[in-house]
Picture 1 (cartoon, rainbow, N blue to C red):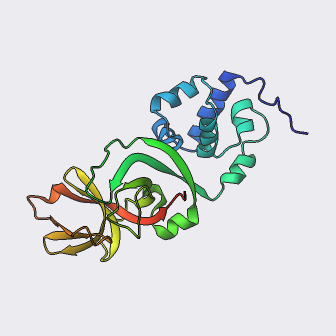
Picture 2 (cartoon, rainbow, N blue to C red; picture 1 turned 90 degrees about the horizontal axis):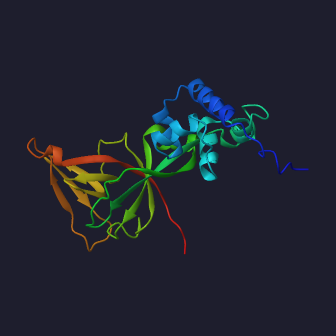
Picture 3 (cartoon, one colour; picture 1 turned 45 degrees about the vertical axis):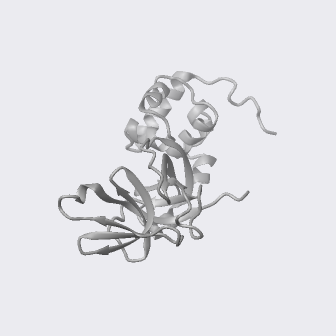
Length: 226
């Protein structure tokens, strides 16, 4: 029978000590843990001073530390409990609060992590570098039908050298576009799937090179169905 009162008594100091010990044991800095959980550095410091995480954040904390909530919150059971088994072989990829324009809209520059999503590590390694992956939401219809407005795109920020015909997130001055990239001498040709949008030519000469930057390659797209 499930013990519904298993967390009825939690020593906040005991929780703080286990959190700090586990973090240090994994070689994580406070800011590293904050990024994985999707909270501020101040919040992690508060946790390590005994403030208890609530709801989804407790689950994220356990996942980032690869330990069971029973052990982390209440000191019950082993460190390597069922939660670690559940998250074995998975990588938490941050969804950042930034929208890629697939049309002519602007890039929302706030890059705060709003949540994390679990992906299989072997899948991410086949696509690129797991530690450089980020999820971003698309705004605009220029890449339809391949990529639609409000889709979520997985971008590998380690892949910055353009491969002809591949899709990249490209920063041009203060805008970021999701486009098919083809490199030409002194310029990049940014093309759309939607024929209503003409190609964009971005100069990459020395004087303007800082204004054009490949953010990373789009390696996966996800979509919510109505």
